[in-house]
Amino acid sequence: MSSFGRRMSSFGPRLAAIALVGLAARLAYGFLADAPHGIGDDIWYHAVANGIADGRGYSDPFSSVGEGGRELFGDAGSPLPTAFHPPLFPALLALASLLGATSYDAHQAIGCALGAATVAVTGLAARRLGGERLGMLAAAIAAIYPPLVANDSLLMSESLYGLTVGLAVLAALAYSEAPGVKPAAALGVALGAASLTRAEALLFLPLLAAPLMLRGGRRWAHLGATCIVVALCVAPWAVRNSVTFDEPVLVTTVEGSVVGGANLPSTYYGNMLGAWDFKGLYASPAARDPTRNEAVQSRRWHHEAVRYARDHASRLPLIAALRLMRTWSLYPLDPRDKVDFAVAHYNHIRALEWLSLLTFLAVVCLALAGWQVLRRGGAALVPLAAPLVLVGIVSVLAYGDLRFRQAAEVPLVILAAAGIQRLRPAAGA
Image 1 (cartoon, rainbow, N blue to C red):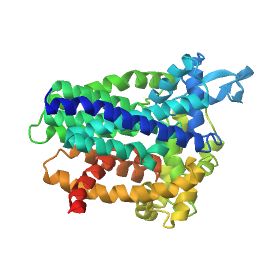
Image 2 (image 1 turned 180 degrees about the horizontal axis):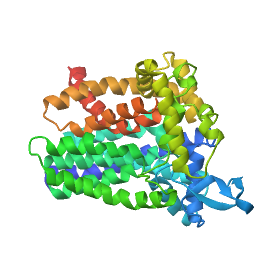
Image 3 (image 1 turned 180 degrees about the vertical axis):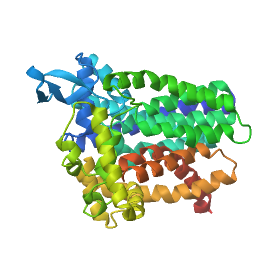
Image 4 (image 1 turned 60 degrees about the vertical axis):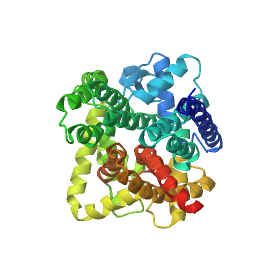
């Protein structure tokens, strides 16, 4: 066997070993974290998945209909359909529930496994970009990088979102090397899966697919193939939603609550600047006059948010900046406040959150160096830049949230690995 063949045959097992380390790190974090705590998205995903397995369909786990049409808390009554979050992550958890893995811990472990798969995909994407050494280094960083580990461990859709974004980056890099309809369709599958995990992934069509395919060659047919595949992935869910709620709903009904909770006195002037206020959202006029139709409720919150933002337009530049700063761990200015917020709102482990802040800063600095290395080497950087831009747009339009940063973590890790490669020769000199 040639030396190239030996290297290729050894890459897979080494990558798998690193992914197993990543799985162990995520399982340990999930075991040590204070979760579940309260009624959050993690409980929502867990309960919806078990409801699907029990034959209740994709229904609200916190509300149901009792005798005489009375609304009940919980699932004791007839199910109320929901589209509050996209369907792919609960659907994966439901498959496990059908096999008997119905506990919170079992579902949490599935998220950890998805995170470990993200480690492997990160390594594959980095190898395609800069060779096996870069692939191994990027996978090693992803395996133990605290921001990724935390997001993958806490039964949130971010574990699947990171994987699908990583697959999209990998598919985009493959397309840039050998453009064609099939690679374009493969990118469409990855983007379709990402969109059914988090709705903002639809922005990858203008931010990633269009610049990649229309640059130079103007490959409209390839872009069309990607868009068609994404549409085929999303269409069944969109049709179901629109029929269920009697008005157009593309992926989710969450948009109204997102902007509703981000445009309030507490988030413009109070102690939640640039963040999202759960209590404020459910004390709003729209919440005091609830409806069982999620699309209608979302529209009411959206109207309230637009009206509030318009009435306080002079604050928008500052609030937009603070939203962006929150997502990128630049606000609050006091690191102790950052740690307190992450522990209180995301169930992060306090001691490890300090390490998370330090490693994130290190990864960003290394990524800046890595960007210069790859740019000078002529590497395709659109697949790495698009997730960073998407995170910025979502933060400015919605609110500041560490979870939004998940889409950017895989590109940041790859760029940081390239930065380390640049520094290592200097260190050895």
